[in-house]
Length: 269
Image 1: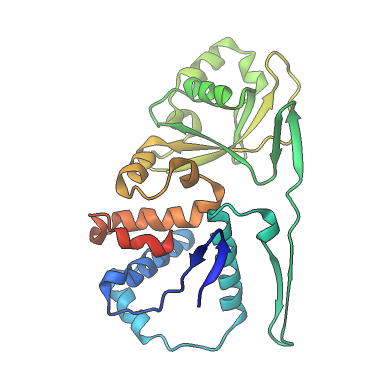
Image 2: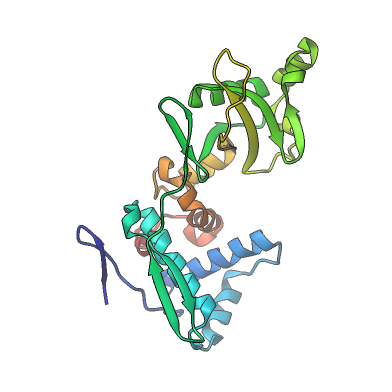
């Protein structure tokens, strides 16, 4: 059965078959299982062990977990296809009754920072950097990107930059000239780091309320993405909607089975 999404674009279900390596079903399950292992700090599984376990799984009755996972996947596909919000759905499910109700979600609350610049709680500003780049150069990129003046920088519960530091010329110079790795206290193997940054209008001291989280993405991981599998544009790759898919592709890039890009990966685009 096919489900039409928009303009004759179809989602075609895949019938699971573990013994056909050319359909990449086990490859995909292996990648996603190791994504979960990374998230929860548990031991990763080898490709062959995933194939053996997948073959022994007995199909179970529908559970709430399965229903929620399926509904989430449908909404993720809509995000990837950049469909209008009118086509998205919230779901309330109670299998004990049984009962399922779908409703149309509302738009995220918009926050007006300046004239012509509006954000939501779901927005995130991203800047490419490197561990060796100076902290001042990274802030300069951020300033050019958002056209605002970064005043405060907080990592976790630690203040990295504050207006008080900037009033001390020697401390400010030392911080701006130090590397991003040293200034933020990084280990050097992080793919990115999220910061809370306080912004003001150029030439003003008052901080704006509601600025998004800032993510610093390090170039070594950008190169991995660009050269590993050239499947998605960079603008989509770093969008919030692509996080889970991005993680799975990074794992697949690391699999020796994907040393050569295979075009039949298209069912999961």
